[in-house]
Amino acid sequence: MSVEEFGRAVDLLARQVGHWEAPRWRATAGSGGILPNRGPVEAASVDRDAPPARRDLMHALVQRIADRAADAEGEPRRPVPRLSNDLALTDQLKVVAADLVAAGPAPDLLGAAVADVQETRRAL
Image 1 (tube, rainbow, N blue to C red):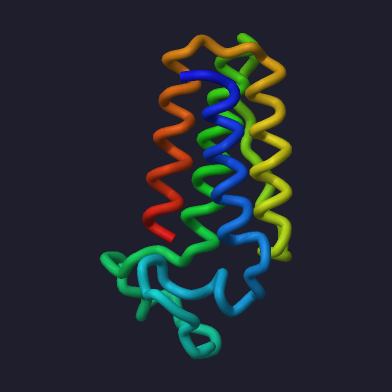
Image 2: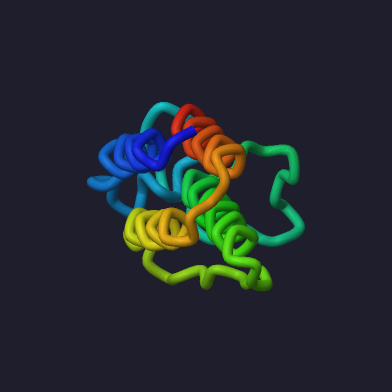
């Protein structure tokens, strides 16, 4: 994989979700639309087998890309902060993607990152 292919995958995902508002980020992944806000849910009533929210999938992708960048740099992995505003997820993705490119990763690592981005894009 090349840096250009990775950049294109990230750009496609960023354009897909960059205009989303908070309700759409809270919606269940694969729901195809905006789900109504159901208010707070008691921890005991959360369905552990339910599909994740879109924001959770996107943050997981951001973390995986950040981990790949750390691996390419030979640095320890660090958790990416979960910001209170889901609208920042697209910017977080762009930042960690730039970090990965700057690290000069091996083609196989870039290929895995492209697959991560494409998988997340399909799931959203």
